[in-house]
Length: 409
Image (cartoon, rainbow, N blue to C red; front, side, top):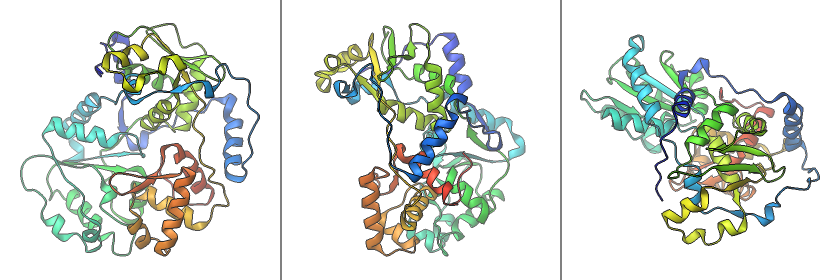
């Protein structure tokens, strides 16, 4: 399938440029929750924490059981990967203009926000050297060898995952403290550090983090998500595409067609659920897309042209938002500690979890398997367990209710 989207209109191009905005970390602003749904959102959160009840379903415009999931080629045509060229250029301009920040820039983002992909795009354009984090054994040994092997040339460097350069362990902080001291003293040359927001919140309490030129991607609201999803439609000369709610039948988003109708509130709900995290919102949006049975037949074997045909000139139905796992307030301490550790380090292996937590290895394995069956965690190809995208909001609500340290997003 051709992944290149059609040339946007000047208005769409302006909207896209305005939405991907790098701002100082202190200027990050959460999108508002629609007033009409604020009470319902609070009740849903409380019910998820303290109960397992369900509300009777209304008669849907399209029964989800009669709709079909879309194969990957069609999903890729409807929701393409983000093009990070614009934000990467903005980052480079910011580095060139902000003399007060010296040679260091930090970019912080919540899980699945896309800031790591942005930084890799910047490194490719700027000719920067990308540095891999040290291994766990080296972190626990102090990391002196890794630090002393820092490249000495005039090229800028990128350390995209500061969260993988420390461990919440008595011996796991010496390396990151020494690293930050050398960076801020200018001993390692010009560079960029990326960091997950949960790690940043913790490291702020145990290390001397930079305070100047710390940037993040500004939160997306409902209109911002509408502009983003239009720009992610990667079809060649698409006919009008409509995204409608399968439950209500209402128009949520139209591309090259009529206005959005009553869909603004639904996209604002999505923005609020994702807490302005456009990368997370994109994943949740993509998971909801369905088609009429005839539209999806044979799509698994579709070639590029067929995939464009399937997705263009069509009504795409939005299934109900994916149900978050029931992470209730009575979840035991072991599971809560495990979830928090995974967020602090943006994923950990089972072996490292057993080393960092006051739990025997067999109990870590039991809890991981239980949480995986619940849909709360998932194992990645790199061997790290992470919070599932669908479970992120529920995990955050649970940790807040139990008094754990949270990130600022």
